[in-house]
Length: 86
Image 1 (cartoon, one colour):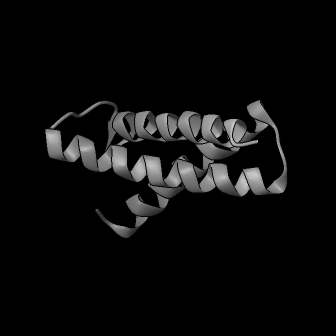
Image 2: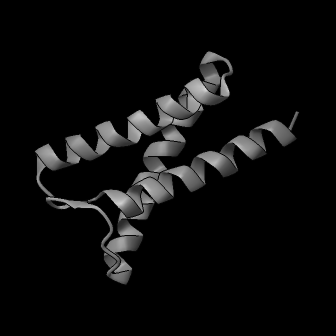
């Protein structure tokens, strides 16, 4: 993966985190949590897609579909864990 495609993947992952924060709300700490979860989920979704050979919505060398799926799964589970720990 080239550096520009890595930056684009990071931008897409951060966009998912910000959109989830806007939809769910919270404090500044939850924004940081959502951004971190989104980036980690996007990276693991991307790696899972490469490992299993699942290519969904590919843009250059970025597997946006699997990255988005991983990001959404991490965000939902992380938000659920954050809310149940209170």
